[in-house]
Length: 113
Image (cartoon, rainbow, N blue to C red; front, side):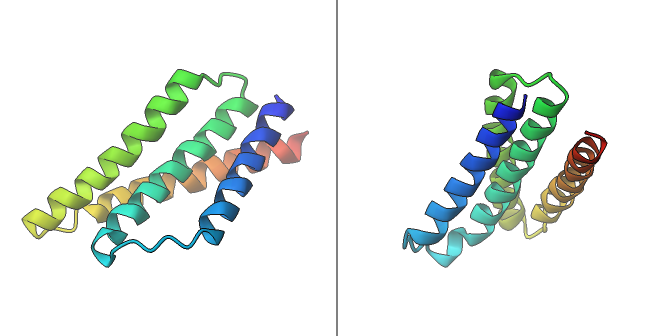
């Protein structure tokens, strides 16, 4: 279990470091989509860490959740933009709540051990 958690944390750190160091400039039009996709991906990563700590991690569930959450969030932002309704706010709230819940559960697991 700890090896998986360490690898997930190392992968997250490595990804953040590479993402911050590589000078990729995206057009400003895509920034809402990228922000929601990153939030959805972080939700999946924290959910995966939580599942690993609870000993029911499944690669298929993790990968399908990772990509489907990112695509759903970007799709909500796109549809909301076309309709003139801030549908992206729903995704931000949902992923934000899940992120904090997963972080609280991870913290409790770490404190108990």
